[in-house]
Every structure is written in structure tokens, then in C-alpha cells.
Length: 310
Image 1 (cartoon, rainbow, N blue to C red):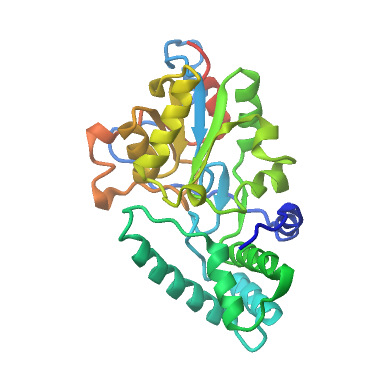
Image 2: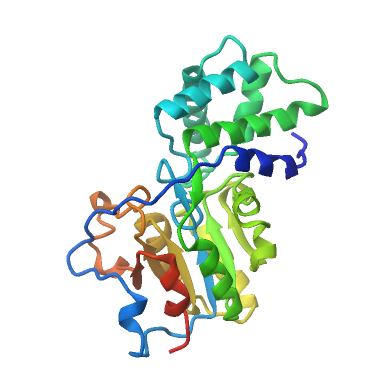
């Protein structure tokens, strides 16, 4: 499928934006302490002088109504939005038809991809391209664009997002401090457009290094795939930055913390939103001393001071 211009999709994100506030997270495991900038001021020695920061996107830089990318919510607003979407793209279908088609197709495709990798990732626009073909609603030069638009509008309906409090300010302050910034995230083609829609420019214009943008859909593998983190470590090494001097910030103990520690990074668990915090206690991740995060933060506004030289 030919790649359509992505510029018009930024407006779609803005038009569908609604404020999402973080919710109070559950208690952390015993002995785990949140790092607070106000308490650390003047103590010194709190940081190994980080030179780079790699961010997760969903649940870290952006609040996610479903708590994570690839999940969905079944709210009345989402149901109405899906019904309207079905009427626009596939008359005669309902929003629940769209949801059922996507879940069924994604599960089937992931099952096939698991024969090749333990960490399969989809390109959601390809699922919707097949849907439109089956509905006889895709033809001509606009087919790719319609599939991408349907993919984006579906995601916005089932999993609305909004900037996490303090995200834009933290990014700006870290850049001003001279740190190298990157992204390592489960993502789709529309994920980078969130930065355009909410922060006024693509990641590379906001201070993220264009060589340190690692999106799962481009790799065909999703976190916690070691391949993504190895690629990031290799790119940083080429820049003269050891993995241990790079802080990986994310909300998931398995996908972010354990995967980062396994690749030699320093890891910070972001525990600022109860929807997205993934302690993975049922998997043993939160109970393992070996996988304990180097830092725990519950406010992105604390991150620039955490990363400041001691």
C-alpha cells in the first residue's frame, strides 16, 4: 500500500481531542519509594549524570483512556463514535461490527506473526485496508488514505489520548539541559502525529534526536522485544553514550523497565497515572529485586531535576 501524506491526520487528532486527567495509581510494592524533586534538592549525588533519555509514549508522555496502545475502552462516547465511523466508512455496519472485525483480524494476524517472532507487531492500516476491500469501499488512489484515516479514527474512538501533565515542559527543560532525547515505544504510523497535534511540531522539531526514534511498527516487533532496545543501545554507543548513562522512562514494568534493564539501560518507572501503570505483579516483575526500577517518578515535572548532574 502506498504511503499517503500524513499531514491532514494531525487536524483529525486535534478535532477529536478531549481532556483526559490522570487517575490515582494503586499502591506501589512495599519498599518502593517515589523520587520527589522537592525532597532531593540540595542533597546531591542523586543522578549518575545522565546524557540521554528515552521515553515511552502511551501512558507516559500521553494519558491514554485505555491505559495503553492496542487496548480499547467501551464507553458510551466510544460506542457512539464507532457507530458514526461505521456509517461513514461502511454503511450498513455498526460500531460493534468494526470492533469485532478489528479484534478478530488482529488476533489472527498476531497468531501468524508469532511463528516468526515472540514480539509481533501489526500495522493497523493494513487491517483496515482489507476491511475496506471486503466492503467494496476502497478503490483508486484514495484507498491508502481512507485506510489510514479509518485506522486513526478507530484508535481515537476506542483509545483517546491527551498530553500527560508536565510532558511538554519536561521535554523542553531536558533539551535545554543538553540531554539527548529519544523515543522507544509501541506505536503506529499516527503516533508521531500526536506531538504535532498537541505540542506544535514533530518529535525531531521538539528536540528529539531523529536517529533515536524507535517505533514498534517500523521494526515489526513490539516491546519488550530486545531488538528495539539493542538498536537503541547501538545507536547511542555510536554517539559515544553508554547505555547506563541513558535513562529509559516508561509506565510498564515488563515492556519498559525490565526490557531496559536487560539491555543495560538505567530505568525509571513512571507511576503518575493509574490507568497506565503496569506493575505486572502477576508476572513477578514487581517482586524481583533484579528488575527493580532505578527510579520511580509520579510527575514528569520532576524528571529534569532527576536528570540534572549531581
